[in-house]
Image (cartoon, rainbow, N blue to C red; front, side):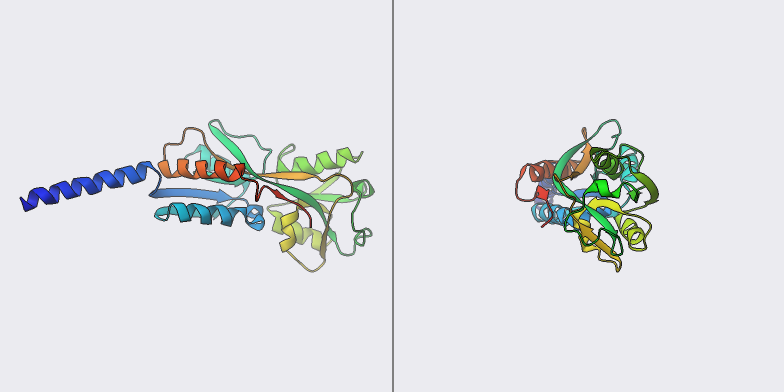
Length: 241
């Protein structure tokens, strides 16, 4: 009789564990992110909120370049990515927008326009623009060329940086100017200043990428949480104060 009760109890525990796993309450989710996602606060807010709802889920977080994230998602090595569209997506991967963020100008403090409260992009037609290591029409490479074209010139594209911290350091030493997310202002190197662009605001997207037909319940749960987060209004737009 005791052995029978033990067997029943073990079966009930196994059934409970299976149900919890099916709901995404347990399991492992691998998350990649571009560094600028952390500057906005969205990364920590979302992961913290998800952990509060699913405290027993194992979360692995790694900073990596956007294309590396997408490649690893296509290979099944990464479940979730925090990326900066626009960017071509692998087959079966989709995104949900979680935030729009104002783009600002980063320039050396010695720049001739550094004292202006708002800088017209048209006055930078002779400057060198530093961009992330992205192909044309991808993310901040596209934002830079599109904003400059709207100001009636094509930018002189110079060196490229692996990430925005690298770009900030390149700006600080005088290699050029850059259009960057306003949250990058938390990076305060000597020799760099940030300022809004004159005219209408230029905005950049932050999104969460995930597989459409995800097999992992915990990864599906995070994707659902991201969609709910993106639908909220309290943290969807970051602009220059």
